[in-house]
Image 1 (cartoon, helix red, strand yellow):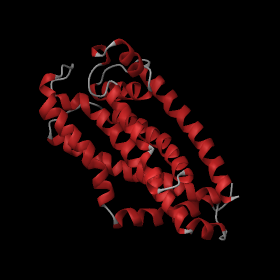
Image 2 (cartoon, helix red, strand yellow):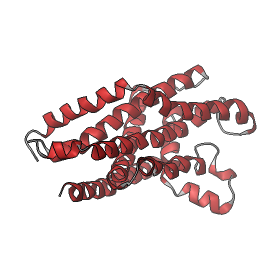
Image 3 (cartoon, helix red, strand yellow):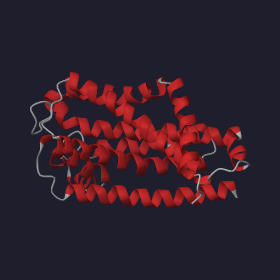
Image 4 (cartoon, helix red, strand yellow):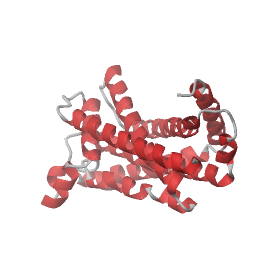
Length: 253
């Protein structure tokens, strides 16, 4: 690894974050749709949905956070695609910087931007009555799972940003990821679903992640869900990272 990797990544991260803070509406826009969904489901549909919580927002919040992350990583793909089209990659290649730091700067920017969006969503949820008895350690566990999920999806976004032929293509890949929480335990218990839908819901990554976060917030034993969630996140992360770095090498070859 280039000895300047960390310093180069820090500089490039600062560049990306300046773009973010000059356009804070990106973070707000990423949070608006999940917040609107949370308001809709709690105040319109919540009374008709039966869960094991007193306030439906307590059940709903983990799924809403995953939707926010799936929405937010689309901007990572778009930012990377824009950098490629602007010729900045060619300029970076002519400079004595670590090649991988270019990608890692975008990845870390995604972590920060999505983290800020999640903070906004949690604050709104608190105003809507969200309450948890989770300890500091349990909050740290939730944060770690969300960060790992964000990393995994961000590397998928890197692949999209490197491979897309248009801005719409760069951001459009995220739509199936945004849709996944709707066919999971994020909105209703999977027991209420018909057979084939229930099978899919119980065997896709979002359900195990949602169940784990719900259990942590409620201080219930997490059981095997946490290991399934970690296995999904780590598996996706490794595959996406390998694919993204291979695509990047082809681009700069």
